Length: 271
Image (cartoon, rainbow, N blue to C red; front, side, top):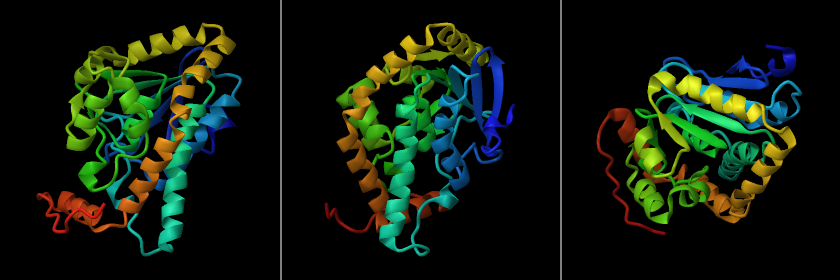
């Protein structure tokens, strides 16, 4: 790989086909959970790809058996270091940059969801222009489970992809679904057997790379305007999510996960 991507040392890159760049999310032993440094690189890499004349299409996948487990729990916002307003602003801006970076990327993105995709990892997988999941992959939004609003991508893209009834059911109950179920619910473009996922993602990416680049990019830009029109919904969901991180519910939910017990939410609803 050339120096064009040298700054993105928390990600892996290769070229599986002409004009196709593949990004592999890699955090061995942690199901490819996103650290703060990796998050920043995932925010910025799309602009670098748009400026790369050797790339027309990007594939993004995960290393090993997982796609991406979302934000690393030990790196979740917890307060105490920054002023609360600064912490909320910082985390809000980071989330916005990741989601809008993918939506505004000019070149098409194909996700190859090879295993567990949670939180920010699921955002990356579902915001791709063509999302391809292994039939056995496990997809979980995860936000309510850790005591925060379903922010990131969920509120803007789930109702558009699978309808409001399914969006509410899965986001509120936080029930997982397999890749096969996700295809049936129109949450992903395709679900394929695990052994052909890589080949299928390369085939689709190569087909896109062989198409008229300007026409493909302009078509993507127009279609993603459906998402841009929901910017007010996205901003509100992301803001609620960041505020929730400093609350007692998130503290209890994450402590319960770490201790492998059921959470005990003592306070009544105040919203």
